[in-house]
Image 1 (cartoon, rainbow, N blue to C red):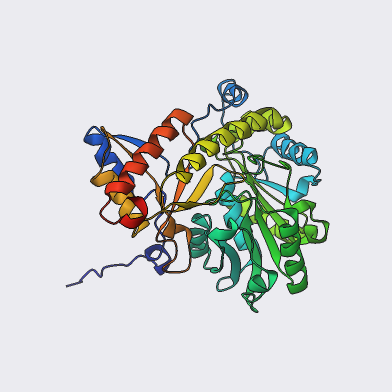
Image 2: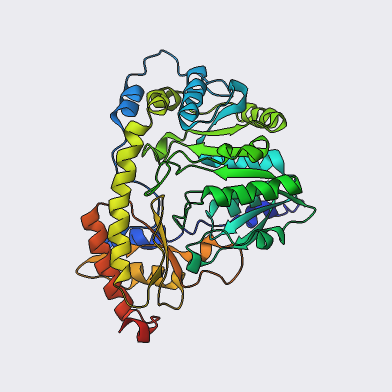
Length: 408
């Protein structure tokens, strides 16, 4: 008799990391089923209307056939990305750009283009949590450099970063404006990263998906403007947040490095193509981006001021003022962020309402860090954000794991 042997999933599959942003969704759905209103501050899903020009471009698509786009991207979309960057003061040739299926695919392509399995990429924690997931998928090792809440999550001394560089290090990976912190690195900080990369023969993977959402200062910043690092910089970009079009799934990878771009194009050919209709619809937005992004940044600045201002008045909360994006990372007077976030959904309500937040430890690679930190995504209307902060204040007052001496 033949006995069928149980087959096992790969180690890669077994070790895949759950999203710290989405893993509490079942609790939120259960709360809603009980009739509780949930304010979603856990995920970067803007509530701002997607520009009419994009929706019109999608609705007006007329064809008897919905074909593959070229693997590099539709010619008019590649040209629109070129024009977009030229408006920032950054020039790319056509073969230095590949349209990707969101910024996520651009990040995967960038990691695979610079590192082999077992190689290391340095990033700064708290960090965009999906970096850790992408590293697992590509068998790359993430080496974290921990940022200090007291400095507003800005870069440490260059020596602290340099101490983490080994013979297996291939790149420095960072995002500015930052997710989850809202920190915007200065050009002086970018110069430090560029100098380290040049001296140690490293690539720079610069995640610039929130570029225009800056509240004070330059909204055209890019690592590509650091001349000494231009030959080793890979820009990862996306339309999701700057055009409030997260479902369009269109991003971009751009680099002046021919070897990187040759490899990225081969990766793109293997996955065939990015969405055809959305690529067409985004062309006019890329060619006139400031029309859409300037009001967007102004709106998020108002929302930032609401959340930051309210948090300053809650006893025991430690918070730095975000400089960009639409996230705020705060230290709360609690025992454990995940326990608190779960409790909000399963055991707490204020007049039939509660809120959903993202526990902070999921944004760290180093075990044990971020237990008292949480991320707020201020993607709701100001009145809803004000109400959410009222709910938070009361929750901290009655939460069993509160540091009561701080919240009484």
